[in-house]
Length: 246
Image (cartoon, rainbow, N blue to C red):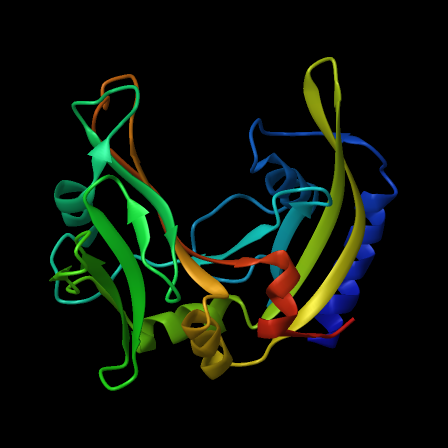
């Protein structure tokens, strides 16, 4: 681990000394994609750390403050959970109202309205060792709690990919309408444990963010476009889940 941290620090200093760098991708993922490209890393979807045994999270210094930890599709007995969530509880897309979408962040501390008919809340079921998506109507009558994530699956994802974290900070500016980044700081963190992760879900610090949309054009127009069911945390709360290494 110490060797990996030392090597990443050296690579970071090399990139930092490059000054302002033009983004290699448009959109909000450009800051991370550009940094990892400069490390020589190709984009992939394997659930492994980005740099040897270190997961890299890159953010803008004056950004939104939310950080994605990992994505996890529900793994309970409910078949085709994402499709069923949209079919049962989705609401019309603003541009293509004949098709449904489902977007919103849900916590365990309060019911969150998504769409017009239902409220949603995360339940930490310690007895059955799973998280459940509790769905109620506006009279708070239970509609469903069939969608779930097993503790085993969540623990595997968290410890396999996010045991050690490097958080890279960058400034952003535009030149001729193009984004440029200057990477100026890196910090290293160590995961406190899965039990701490569960407690942060119970307290509402860690939330589940659904971004289930549709394709807006092309041959797949109107088809489901799942951008990922993400477990998220505010950057200011990161030290509740992680200990600082350096």
